[in-house]
Image 1 (spheres, rainbow, N blue to C red):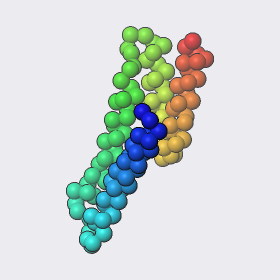
Image 2: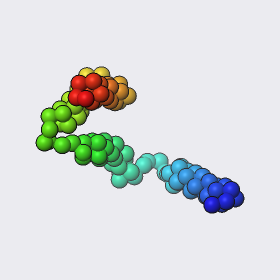
Image 3: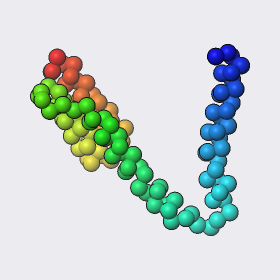
Image 4: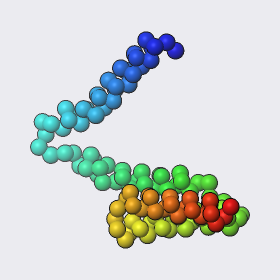
Amino acid sequence: MSTKEVYIAIVIVAAITFTIRMFPLFFFSRRDTIPKIVKDLGVLLPYSMMGLLIVYCLRVMRFDSFGGFFPMSLAALVTAGSYLWKRKSILSIVLGTAVYMFLIQQVFV
């Protein structure tokens, strides 16, 4: 792929991204209220995405060995528990990742 083609691809991707981001502004700017389906999607989609991410992260969990099951389970519990405790997503992600990394690198070598 030549340099010219790369620049053209970047411009096309930027234009599409800009259009997608500006679509709601143009579509809903003249209305006084947001449609019910858009409000419902705004409420439900974040939870749906979290569920999808949980399934994606835990899809490789193996139950045939303690060394594969325990670190992932404990890290998931720490992540969920710290989120319920402090309601801070970043803190939960960092703590869960730290627990998992510690367990697989130091305990279950």
